Image 1 (spheres, rainbow, N blue to C red):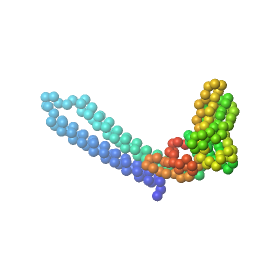
Image 2: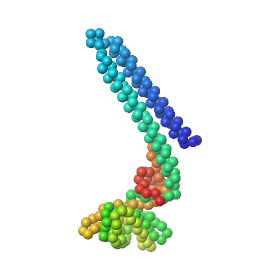
Image 3: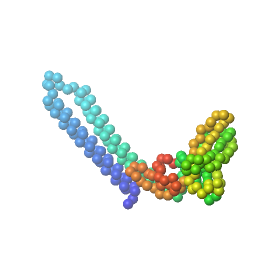
Image 4: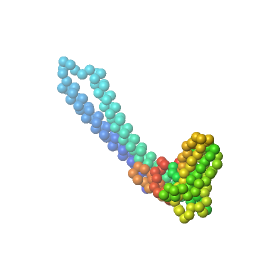
Length: 213
């Protein structure tokens, strides 16, 4: 089935429902308004300003109801579009916030970002339990995204290692953010969200992606 036809059909159905609901609301209001005018006090009848105000109120309520339905239909269409875009990511590497090392053939790699220039950056490789396996001085680094590699011969057979970055400029600490890289294996559409199934990091929300390689 053509995706475009699904989207159009959904939008059309929602619009028709919204129009019908708005019309029903207006019909009920008009009946009440007519009944009110028929039973009003002849000595104190409603003036034009009152009638105009009530008409404006019902138009506002009807408009809000229609807008709410239209926004829901638009959200559904955007979710379908996101799902199609996500499908193109299968087999590609993505970067998300995290601190898991990415294992290659001979080396493990990691990515981090510095909020400012640092004259000393220290890398600590951590076991799954959190103990320090190795410490490496990465030297001075500039502000922005940085990459490093670490020899897997030091892994001691561990297949899932984390890392920690400590950066300083003089005696002041420099804020750093660590990232994890992994390959997209599959796409899972759950409700209105597109979820990515990564090779080692599990399932993440599409919105968590920082970069696509």
